[in-house]
Amino acid sequence: MKNPDLTKQEFETLSEFRYRLRRFLRFSEQVTRKHGITPLQYLLLLHVKGFPGREWARIGELAERLQAQHHGVVALVSRCEKLGWVARRQNQTDRREVEVHLTAKGENMVTRIALLHRNERFNLQDGSLLP
Image (cartoon, rainbow, N blue to C red; front, side):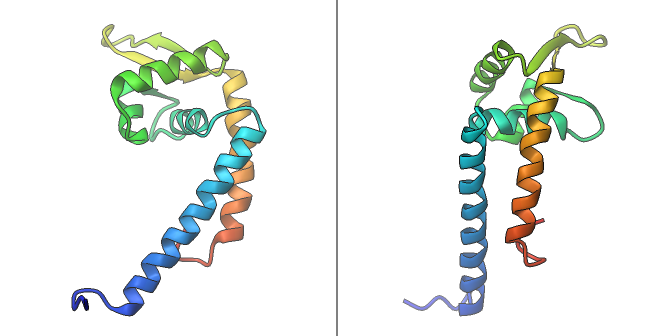
């Protein structure tokens, strides 16, 4: 069945984007596991480090960035905390809020793996499909 709303070129572009995205994600899965961290743990550390405008993030903010349920992110933070990668701190302004901060060990881990991702991103990039 023909779809007049999408051209063949648009399908090719979408296909190419998904292919490159999947290659990058597969690389990420392999490199994180090779370095003793799960892909989800790495993403948590990355989102804490890369949160706009500050050096920490709230659980709800991390849940949004990970597209995960709040309680699942609480459990993920707990696992990362046991590994020494993050620390929880009570927010000084609103004591009900919990901030998630990277520890020195977490900074080291996320930086090491992010460098490997940066190199792979440039290997896959043609200037338009991956930022």
